[in-house]
Image (cartoon, rainbow over all chains, first blue to last red; front, side):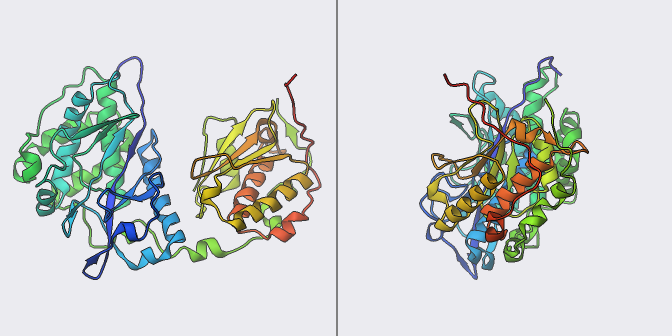
Length: 289
Length: 143
């Protein structure tokens, strides 16, 4: 590792949709027109978009996402009656799982950074997406190799589809993103390899990429932060090896543990309950200098 | 969700003692540290656009409770974030019990959050006088 460690924040604006029966719910019918809300809608007015606070810790972002879901169902409990769906595409609407990096172009050229992400994060993402949906999402201009957007705070990596299907998948993709970029920023001696080609993205070329996966995984496991986030990142290995996708049999909101929160917020306590520990030990308070 | 500035003196310990990490909340809160000079013991900032009238009533009750117990509070609506920011002054944070735990600040923080979430009996709270609270005075450095 380089002598001076460069740490950075990551963030995200993943998308999902709500479905009732066979109809997709329009986000604009349920949300105020408030661009800075953390639960908002994408530009198409149909899909919902989450804007969790950024953090240096990817697991904190997963916590922030769950908190947004929880506060939303407290505010509008009718969301619980819908089925929530994420992934690549649903009923004509593509879902993005863009990841944000708080790194300026002076710290790293954004085009270079995105290239590293494509070979390690983009490739893994393609391997666990549902292939038919992944192709549909990328049939237009979305999610191609090198897709990124420069922002005031850094840059946005855009090829990934929405990894919101469960907190485990979200943690895996965010931790992998942080691990790869941390290695880029802090280990100038790392032996990088190239695995994907531009065609792999629109075609979701899983047959070709699965042959590359042992080498991709070998590199990932050598990265400095892999050991820190191993419990989360290893889900990707499990899914790829068992030829599973990141979609699961359960409703997305069940996976996130988002249920009717009335019981959690309804009970009142007496003020003496909140002060009982303090009152028990009230004598001899000291103010440390 | 309640978050805190982890680098501010004793705030991680205060959050731990307040046992607020897993509390399900309707609003978002962030606790941070205030220095002694020119600051009240507790400062609460929020944006009027994101709260309702009942919130303002609860806040008034909270102010009554804290001032009854010698803790000066400043409330500001001049805040453009979605969360409620709770500033705790350094001398409050550094008040430790005999087991070296910041229970006073932890209890103040949990009272603020429970009150603003409408999860505490505010009529009882307005009259609740604690028997042993250190004296907190404001330190002004203005000329």
